[in-house]
Length: 107
Image (cartoon, rainbow, N blue to C red; front, top):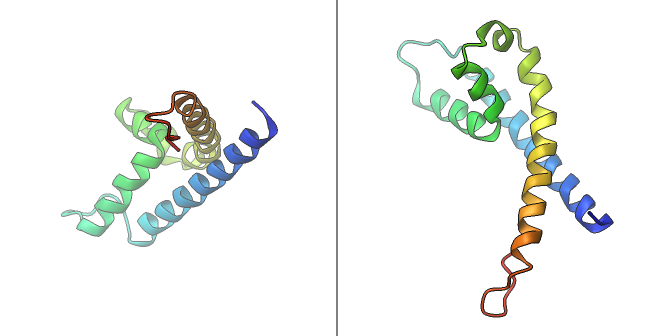
């Protein structure tokens, strides 16, 4: 990976990290996850956060609730997955641009 792709990867990772923190803060700000019935706004914020951070969703599905409920897993997985997402997105975009469609770049 050359220097330009590394800079782009870090920009994507920082943007992903900021969005993840924002949606986590909004979801926590609106209240507890275990409301009955769940307010639609709260449900939307958590769904967007699960989309941005699939490690948390996987942890909940695998019944790792003791690890997830402590909050350590949540706050440790955000930077790790943001870096991974940035790397994957930049590599994928670079790979797609090697095959121009009708002479145009994809990204």
